[in-house]
Every structure is written in C-alpha cells, then in structure tokens.
Length: 388
Length: 77
Image (tube, each protein chain N blue to C red):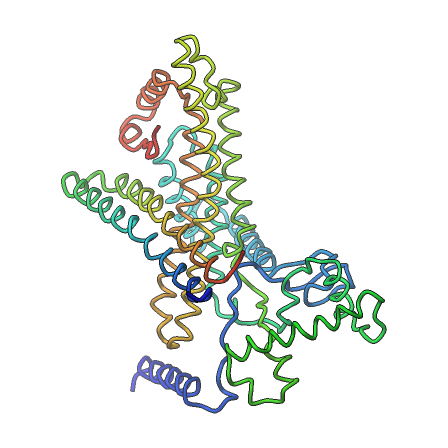
C-alpha cells in the first residue's frame, strides 16, 4: 500500500466516522447548529468594567472578532514585506523571486488599464489587493468561525434602553444581589424574557429539553462567538475600504485637473449654450454625483456580500454533509482572489477615469497623447470599460 | 399567511429573482467576449480583463439581492 493510499484511507475513515457520529451517534458527539451573525461579534473589551472576554458593559472599547483578524492580516503582511525587503537583491532567487514574479504580473495587469498613472497608483492599488486577498484567504483557515467562547445571546447586542443597560451592567459585574432601585422591576422583566427565549430555543433544538428545566433555559441562550472572522465579512471594514478607494480617485482627479475637476459635477459653463443646455448639464452633474456615491455602496456590498455568502455556504455545507464543503472551499479560494483583484482593478479604473478631463475633445486629445507615448499596446489596452 | 412563512418566502424570492437578470447578463457577456477572442485571439488578455470587470458589475447585482435576502432571512432590521 503506497503512502498516498494510506493517507486517503485514513482521511476517508475519519470523514465516515464524523458523519456517523454526527447523525447516528449519542448526544455528546453531535455538534450543535452554528449561530450565523451578520454583524461582527465582540471578543474582548478594554475599559468599561476592566479588561476581559466579552463585551463588558458596552461602555469601553470593544474589540470585534473581525478586528482581531484584521490585526492578524496586517501582521502577516508586515512579516511578508519585511522578509521580502531583507532578501531583496539584484539577482533574485527563492522566495524573493516568487514575490517579484507576483508583483510584476500584478503591475503589468493593472498597467493595462492605464499606462500613464500605473506607477503612481500601484502602491495604493497593490496594497488594497494584498490586504483584501489575505483577509479573504486567511479566513478560510480551519479555526476561523469555529473556535470561540460561549456568550449569552442577549449580551450580543448593546442594550438599547437605560433599564436594559443597568440590567446588563448588574449581570456583568455579578452584583445582582444588591440591585439598584430601578433594576428591581427590570430583573422581573428579564425573567419573563428568558421564558420567551426558552420557548424559541425549544423550537430550534429539541435535544436541550432532555436536561434540567432551569439549566436548559440557560444553555439555550448561549451562542458560540468565534475569536476570528474574516474582515471582509464585516460591513464596517468593507465600507471603510470603499471610502478610501473612492476618496483616492477624487484626490487624483483634483490633483491632476485642479478645480476644473469639479466641472464634471457642476457643469455651470453649459449655460452659455442656452438655458435648456444648462439645465441638462445640471442634471448630468447630478447623475455624476449619484454615480460616485453608488460606487462606494457597490464596492462595499460586493466584497461583503461575496465573502459573507461564502462563509454561510461553507457553514451550511458542513452541516449538510461534512465532505460537501471541499469543492466550496476551493470555490471560496477562487472567489477570494477574484474579489481582491476586482476591488483593486476597480480602484485603478475609477482613479484613472477621474484623471481624464470630462470634455470630449480633451479626452480624445489625452488618448492620442498616451498612444504616441506608449507605442504598441498602449492604445489597444488602454480600456475605459465604464466610459461615459 | 404567517409572518415567519412570509419572511422565508421573501428571502427566497429576493435571491431567486435577483439572480435571474444577472445570470442572463453574464451569459450574454461571456458569449460576446469568447466570440471576440475566437475571432481575434491576440486580444485575449485585454478582452479577458474587461470581461471579468463586466461580469463583476453584473454579479454585484446578485450580491445585493443576496445581502437583502440575508437581511430578511436573519431579521437584521
């Protein structure tokens, strides 16, 4: 028996055993259904009741699981960059050669969009690419979304009312024996709330009901809060990235065209062709403004939707049949790369569009210049896929 | 109809109809791009980049529908 067959055999037996234990085994070997959260969950807090696991009383700094992962991604990128920097030489070999190949390929691919500005845009665009790529790929490692701690479900949300806040603080500091005067009634309400929660919990998982009554009520409320979550699966992160990418394009527009950049949004000069043309110009300017704003939304939701949907699909597939997630894992690797590439190349395209003057004559003039400057492929590949 | 049933139905319909249009669009897009590459193979690089961009624009509509479906399904608001 060769080595490969043996490994496959062991793998097959493990998979089969996990399936049998999950569906036919005793209670203790079954994995409970996962809790899917659209928001990033709190992992630990600094201030607001000391430093420790969980959200505390929500008044301090809350570190979410996506923020932990972001720090990890940045750390990995930093270490990679330092290694590449330390091994840089004129005669590349080994790991440095590999990285140079990747960066060179990336530079040429992005350069096909705009040859004139690629040297200026590449630091930003390349950083976005590597950051998004690593935050997508590191999130596929085992342990992300599966290793965590248990938190009562009602503590996942910050308390909205004053009463709930006091109540939460009491529950957190464990001083419920000496409640403040407004908290008396609140505690009674909490009891009622738990009763309702218990009812819902019974509907979701029947296995808890075999345990003691009071114990079951507490158990049903706990949800697994993972320590790690992909940064791209947190809308806050993707919106910030989208804002950075959009503002970067505006910055280059202003820098290259000066004040005349804003003529695109407020084409008041159209009024010299008559009132009708002026009104049409104002409308066109409005459409331009809306399209700039829509870019931020579409940047942010595209990345968030893809990565979050991928995580949910992986989770669903694991609980449908354990082996079924393998093809989807491969798909997620592909999608993670494509999304990183698309985010970066869209930043490139929009920045490059912003540096082109809006008027038609001037735009043609620019393209003519770039054709002459860059010769062979410059004209053929200088694409404006989202032209006006 | 039960509220819960309506919610599940809404989530399913949101992603179902949301995937319909972009699916057709991506099909047309790749059709055009592959024909262009077939007629003029040396432009493959730039056609492929623009094709992926177009696919992504069409696909992001599906993703919006998916996000809405998740929001309905998980009762976010």
